[in-house]
Structures are given as C-alpha cells and as structure tokens.
Length: 363
Ligand code: GLA
Image 1 (tube, rainbow, N blue to C red):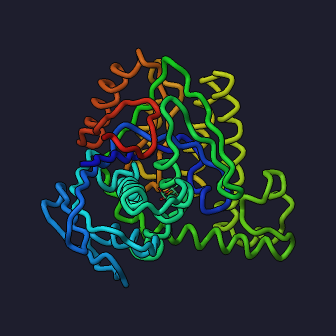
Image 2: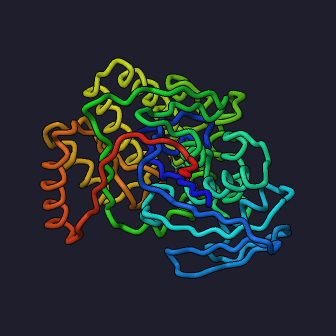
C-alpha cells in the first residue's frame, strides 16, 4: 500500500510577487498531508478525510463541478489533470497542518494528490507540470486565484535548502539554509477570513497598476519593472493605491535578490533585515497585515538570536515566520508566547523546523 507525504510550505520572502511575475524564496516544511493509497476494483475514487471524518466518492471521469466542499480540491485536480484513469483508488488523507493558517494546507493536498495519481495512472508528468495542475485546480474549480508559489514549493522542496524561484521565467535554484539556524513558524490563530476576497482584490489592483503603467511603458507584469523605474512613471501619480501596490512588488523583488545573496554568503543579519523590510512593506504598502501579525514580528525581531521575522503567505492573519539561531528558539517561544498572550489573550502556536523535502512516496 503506497503512502505519500506532501509538505506544507513557508515562504521566507517574496510575498505577493508570484502572480506579478516576481521572485519568491520558499521552503517545504516537515508538517503536511499523508495519503494512504489502495487500488480498488470499482471505477471510482474513494477519498476518506480523517480531518472531517467523512468519505466522498468521485467518478473516474468528469465533468467535475465545485460543490463548496473539501472534495472540490480533489475534483479540481481531476478536472485540471484531464487524465485517462487506469484504475480505481481508495485514499485515506490525514494532515497535521493548521487549516487556514497560511502554510498552504490546500497546495499540500492538491499537489500530493496530483503526484500520487501521476504514479498510479502512469501519466509521466513532471513535478513542474503537476504544480501547474495543482494551481489550476484551485483557480478553476475551488475559485481561489492563487499563484504558483505554494504548489511549486510543495513539489520542489529539498532538505536543508530554500528555493529561489523566478515566477516569470520559471528558473529556479536551491540556496543552502545555514546550519545552526531554524525557521520558526508562529501561528497567530487569527482566522484569515478576508483572505480570498482581499487576495483577489489585490490581484485586480496590480492588474490596474500594469494598465496605468502601460500608458507610458510597455510591460506585461509588475515584475518587469526595476525599482528606480517607478519614480519616473507619472501615470501612477493620480492613483495612490496602484502606486503602493506596485511599489511593494517592485521593491520586494529587489529584497528577494538581496536576501538570496545574504543567505549564500551566510550573512544572517543582512538576511533578517530584508525580512523585516518585507513585513513593513506588506503592512504599509500592500496592506495585508493586521495588529496581531505586526506585534509578533516586532516582538520576535527584538529577541536575542532572532535574525528577522515577517508575515508569511497571503496575510490578514495566519502565520509569521521568524529565522533564528537554534539555541535562541526555546527562549523565543517562551518570551513571545507570554507577551502575545498578555497583549491579545491568545496562545499562539509555535513550530520550529528546517527546510524539508517536497512531495515524496514514503513506502
Ligand atoms: C497565498 C497564495 C500564493 C501567494 C501568497 C502571497 O499563499 O496562495 O500564491 O500569492 O499568498 O505571497
């Protein structure tokens, strides 16, 4: 009986740049989704979710429709894959990722499912092709307009390495994550209720900025602009929202490049500075943070041995990522946990890890 593990992801820096043809620096983590797969004789897929304590049965061939139910993630993959199925499967799914915590529990699910189907039905698709399938599953059937960041990180993660990806060219390379440091994920436990609607609004605002810029300069996406270009574009002057969104994306791309260089040269102080600047820009210009995330970032970054911190993922709640020396993690958890509790009356959840592998078959 094959067993697959599909991780969640933490984006270290490069937030809200993926759908703007920009750059990102995620890792795959050690929490994720596990799939136990059995071949069955029926021409169907039986999917049992331990989280929901519920089983659904999907036909092997479509058309598939959205039903506003967790099965949509699976139906979305089947829809985007449009494969010729060779056998029925029974799949039991369990996860230790917090749902709606900004660690991409959804891409963990869709990417893991796509990978196991690829093997069971001998489809011969590459990990990159399957990452696009997982993205389309969410875009076309679940109805979330997310970018490639999450499925890519889940597909391509590698132990001990971060992934520097250019979402325009799809060129990527691995960057060693230094020994003696950990990625600390802090779940604010603030529910990201606005995420889907505000996320789609941000995408529209960026598209509007591109439209305005095109009155003066021919670009396809905000990722085409260099930082200094922005000051010379007068068509954004009358539109402060478009200007702020564009400024975040353009400057965030430059921050990713500097963060990658800092990581490569082991300058964790410089790396942490880029994380903090990223968070400030996400709060001020992109306006996707909230009081709880700001507090966690500010307090974490003042603790000894912490290089830097920022929100991770879509925002409006969810998680903060801090990068810290291994020996600083336990005191950070204690101090930050206590301060957050006394300020907001919430006991944040902490999880510390190093970069892990992408989706893999365990047995
Ligand atoms: C969510 C989306 C990603 C990306 C991030 C923000 O996680 O799924 O595609 O846009 O937000 O960086």
